[in-house]
Figure 1 (cartoon, rainbow, N blue to C red):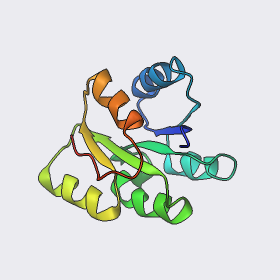
Figure 2 (figure 1 turned 180 degrees about the vertical axis):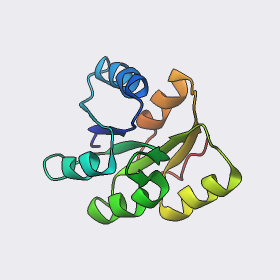
Figure 3 (figure 1 turned 135 degrees about the horizontal axis):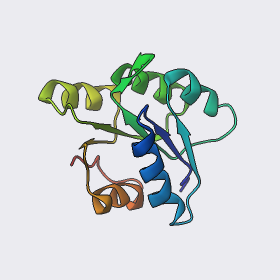
Figure 4 (figure 1 turned 120 degrees about the vertical axis):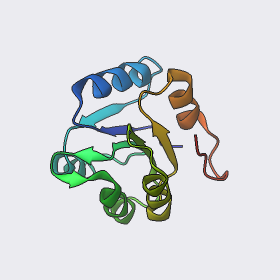
Length: 125
């Protein structure tokens, strides 16, 4: 399973924290703070997981799900947001998200998502 991880969030602290969590477990982590930066990363690296914030400076993260799935259909997208309304959850899953987590989140919750065995049903937290 591809364990390259892309974190798309304009909050530097969130990117830094997730990068530390995953890189300390030997995973390859790339961060992007905008839609433009994130899409460019797919040109050079295949990502197994994308951690995607809903609110980006140049895009609606939920709209970005479709674009990521078009570029990389196998990538598992985990939407993360402080705005966990039912409408956002429903839209995220309709667009193809693998999971949806509310910020702030617990570290074990995030690690579980990446260690989730391939081929199983979608996990929702």
